[in-house]
Image (cartoon, rainbow, N blue to C red; front, side, top):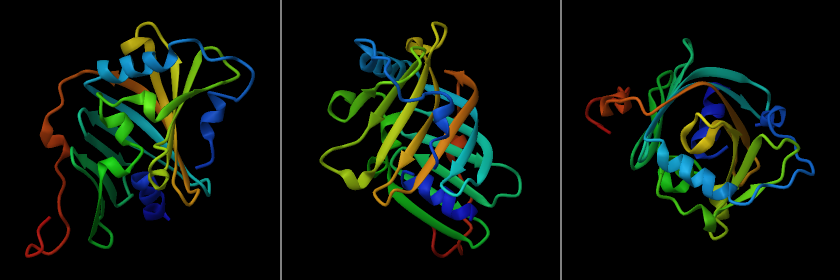
Length: 211
């Protein structure tokens, strides 16, 4: 069960628990909101946050998220969960220490690429979704030329003290098989120095196989 949740997240993946933040309604998105999201992404060189992950079956896991742009991300799960997801700038790697297995996917084939590339052109792949709360900016990112890469819906809270005036609250990832995983963030901290070594990981496979 743990591994299935993490796999869905790594590929793009849970009930829309962000509905508690952003409920579809009749509030029209403000002009320029997509530009504000781009400005937020460009202003965030690094971020740490506590996360709560919920999969399509309602299974909840917690952990610590560390992000460093471009391309680096680490999902360190709660104690007792033998999984780790790391993005090293080129690929997303899921390490299952219970069965000593490693799987890798190009970051560009995951909706998380939108979060990890500060120079991404959102205009071609993203749109602002109307919500029932003017405090919330909801952005759906999907490459129309590559629907198999899935969809990422990000929720931002308007906050003048946050980078670009927005605070990332979390996201919902949906893959091409309609597997969903939601991530809810708390205690977000921005732009503190983060060493590249944070994104190293221990390979559980036999030494002769390497990475």
